[in-house]
Length: 254
Ligand SMILES: Nc1ncnc2c1ncn2[C@@H]1O[C@H](COP(=O)(O)OP(=O)(O)OP(=O)(O)O)[C@@H](O)[C@H]1O
Image (cartoon, rainbow, N blue to C red; front, side, top):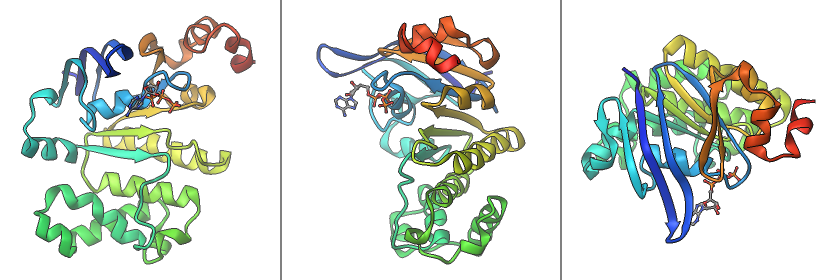
């Protein structure tokens, strides 16, 4: 049984502007899927529909056997605890420490009062520290986040997502602001997480070579439609043409 089922998903922000059209897919547990496509293809919109940061216009999404569209506000909160988000610009609170930012990932499990007061158990603090250690960030645990490099901030973002105990990580251009070395560190961590912890990763990427290197499967979007869905080794120049347009194939594959 797949972890995520998407049936006939469509999204319009405005009446006659179709941003996603009839998207269908199933994604299994532990699968590492990259979504590629030109700017404006609908990659971020697709990720936001899955955790219902936005509502789709048509279609159905089932996650972990639950119909995501029909969730009440309370159940939506529970749904989101199972889905970690990784953002291009990290979305950390810069004046707080690394470990405080990681602990924010537990908010979905707390009452509003506990969250506001920052009441975390010793177990949660230990877990936060262990995650930072796993990501090579333990020596920075008590630094303010605005003292970190981009690659370090993204590792904090990953630790914050992991402390949620998610089944799925949605990563929206996680390496778009990073240099090649930091990008490799982040992609290596995401791949390890997916394989060792059996967490499904759906990663929006602009770098086709990175998608090919790390993914079990690549989905190509163009103008809101899936134009490629297959293994990363089968992604050849004809598929690149379909995804990015006729001029792009040679440029990207050379
Ligand atoms: N909140 C919004 N209101 C109206 N239109 C939007 C909104 N968010 C996105 N769009 C439009 O939807 C289309 C798809 O945007 P989206 O951000 O999903 O694409 P993308 O593939 O992630 O692009 P990029 O690679 O540049 O991040 C674009 O035309 C964009 O202008």
